[in-house]
Length: 193
Image (tube, rainbow, N blue to C red; front, side, top):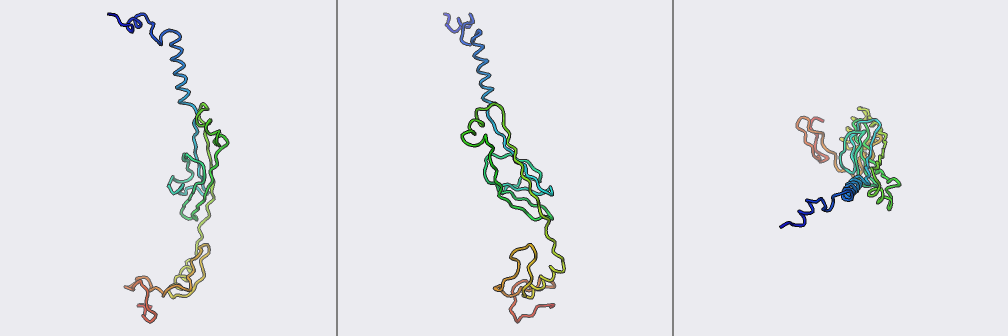
């Protein structure tokens, strides 16, 4: 007994053969290739600092040393923090704005229907300030004033570091020669002082 499918195969009259079948296969391949290459937006942000070499954090995650380029998915506000020895740390809320082709409803077309890839490259430059150097004699004078419990002048560039009038009793000197590091009563002598 001969089955119809074997007859079709023997005669070459099965579906997909001939010029019309080849056209369908080519068209299917073209559509699949177009679907795979259609619409894609690559988003990258580059963070640079002056001087370079700062450790960069984006939204609390360490990403590397500046200058650094990293991909991102969403637009909006980003918290960027830069840390470098010898410089003041910098923390910025940086708005990352979408380009015109990423604004709804255009984003649907650019993400899904346009052939090829679009690239959104955003660059942010941040100047870092040199860290203030306090002279050692001024720093030692402040330490001595704090040890005695007297008010001292605040350090420049350091907010809220002056002792408050409501501060508790003076602390004993650091443990040099066995001295304790806890509050002493006003009448207790400090060893070595």
